[in-house]
Amino acid sequence: MQILQKKKITRFKESLIQTFFMTNATLAVMILVGIFILLAWSAIPAFKEINFVKFMTGVNWDPTSPVKEEYGILSMVVSTFMVTFGALVIAIPIGIGVAAYLSDVAQPRTREIIKPVVEILAGIPSVVVGFLGIVLFGPLIAHLFHLPNGLNALNGSVLLAIMALPTIISISEDSLKAVPRSYQEASLALGASRWETLVRIKIPAALSGIIASIMLGMGRAIGETMTVLMATGNASAFPHGFLSSIRTMTATIAIELGEVPYFTTHYYALFGVGLVLFIITFLVNLSAELILHRYQEREQ
Image (tube, rainbow, N blue to C red):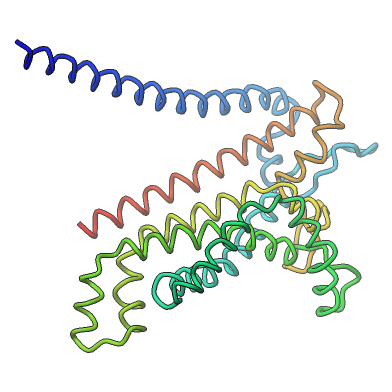
């Protein structure tokens, strides 16, 4: 009798825990859908006044022009991808290199120093990083490339790379440490060097985690606002290279939403920019999940 009662209590607890987790998962999905509906509903009035194709393909964003208001976001979309791509080009090799060093090469004492520094780097406010871009990296870029100022896409890419590094380093290191030790021992026993073992055995085995770290770093770069707002020049013109001043989608929303009159075409158009950014971020994360899923299936 007592055994049956214990089983019933155990089943009830399991059911309660399952319901709790299911409720949380459902709530997360509902919040995501709610944000999408809010952005879409608020953007609809803008597209009654603005041609959607011109909105997506136009390169000029000038909502306050006394002659003709223009609502083209292509330059902002390109600028956002440009600065994100530049950040990843810088952050990926450095991040994976540091992760490999911490997991396989560094002495315990060295690791105890570097690991907290990386974690502290993740906690630096974005406004502080943006300030460093203005007073340190900006003048350096201007001097190296003989520019009037260094507030451009390259400056933003360097700063976003710094902000993405802690994520890439931490997750990549954990993935490398999770590789079974037997893989490394078997490789060394067959005559491979430590470098060959790291490059040909450990990194491929940890690739799913490394890809996840890169995609999370990319998500951080795409959604960053204050740093790019401060350090990229805020020029809404179409960029012609990394030395051009740019304005990303997040920076445009942050600059203009607080000053625009409510319930105007300009106001609703900013929600349209937010909707496009939301969809891009969602597609990036979805693509990352599909890549990871396919890679994990191939591993199995």
